[in-house]
Image 1 (cartoon, rainbow, N blue to C red):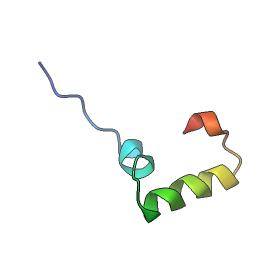
Image 2: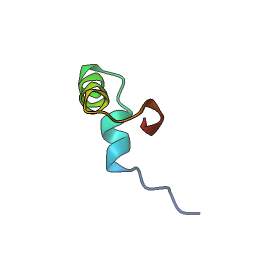
Image 3: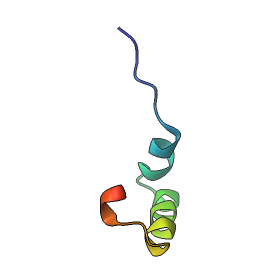
Length: 37
């Protein structure tokens, strides 16, 4: 069985620290809808 590859966006937006908050906040303020996260 193969291991599922982690996506780059998962590494950015899945973070639960301050940097993950910054990444998500930036895109939300840019107009991306909530369901994109």
